[in-house]
Amino acid sequence: MEYFRRFKPRFPKFNIDSDYFWLVNKVHELFEISVPISTNRYVRLSWFILKIFSYLQYIYLMIQLFRLISRSSSSVEEFMASFNLCLTLTASLARLFCLAFHRQTMLTLQQYINSKNCQRDDSWAFELRKTTYERNVKFFARFQLYAFCNSAFWCFTEFRKVEAFQIPFVLDWMPPTLKHCVEIFNSFVGIVWSFVCFLNFTQFATILNSLRTELAIIVKQFENIFFLSVSKYALDPTEIANLNLQEKEFFWEELDSNLKLAIFHHSKFVKLLRAVSSTNFFILLSSATVMITANVYLNLIQPSLGKIPLFIVAVQFMLEVVVCCTMFERLEQENDKIARHVYGIDWLHVAGKTTSAAQRRARKSIWQNALLVQRQVHGGGLKAKAGGMFELKRETSLRLINLVYSMLTFLLKAHGK
Image (cartoon, rainbow, N blue to C red; front, side, top):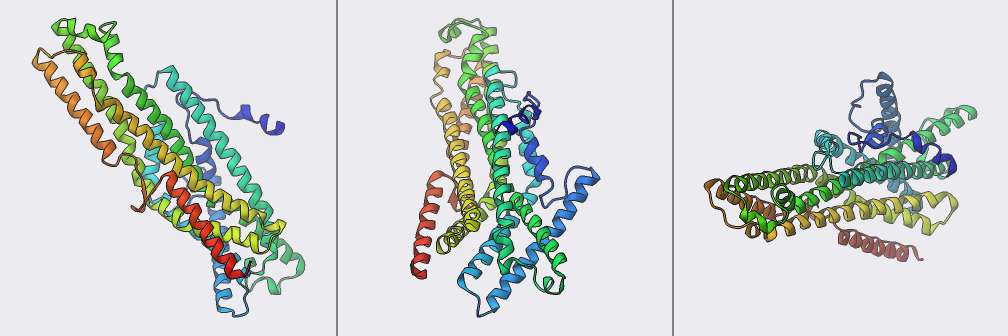
């Protein structure tokens, strides 16, 4: 740990213009399906080489799976191992295609979060954003390091032993030395998938964590709308009724303007977040049940040190489901706070009666915008649904765990254990 602490100061320190996603985007640039945004020719060449070898590996693994299906002598364990790996890679690629399809929306969402327009000069908001920035960097660095080490261990142990994971038709005629070199290179290519498989998780986890921070700041802005406007004209809300006509008009106009600004920040990311999450998380929830079950099952029927990484991968996929569902639920809880702040709109009555046409227009606008917020929150709010069917909340992740347990019980009984 002391070795890694020495590298901590090298990470850029947070300032108001810092990019929440600098580390995630820098690493993921090499593993996305889309051509890298960077114009650096070495980055693009590296991306191209990685894509060629990783896709070739995917193709031969699929060929091996079909060979196992067609071969009557194949054992259940061989088939499950090959099927599990091919399903994991296929699901990861499908989610990458979804991410590439919504690439512009993702970039727009990241740009919105990085703009930090809401309460940009507030010291409390600055500290909250700083904490989020540091948490994003630490989460990605630690999680990706664990995934890399786990994948490297498996690729150089179990992956090299199983016949179904070997390159078909090619290795048979090679001399032993060359064959050994090709197998080692094949294992190195396998490690690349540790980034591909969890690229969506690390992207969405950092985005959802950052969005929750921005939403908490927006909630704070809704809390302070009335009192910030009052503080410019009086010491106490009850004194607003005693202001002269011009001061009252300025007060109502500023209150209306502040509410519209808060609603703008709230509406902006609600639209963006829904667009990128539906299909991606539908693929995750549809495939995660089978992937988690298969990885745990392979550990239980033939326990060995080389299969421990499979169990860790199952835990990582389960962690992705639980973390993302929990974060979406917390976003919804923050969203509900906004509805509670504008539900009563008691400050409309505390401020006294309006005495001019300008005051009445501002008051009417405030009332209508408050109703708009209520419709946004209760008309769906941030309730993201995977494929329009599964609500992303903690209850969904618990149901998935129960389903995994049921499938494991069935498979173990069928296997006679």
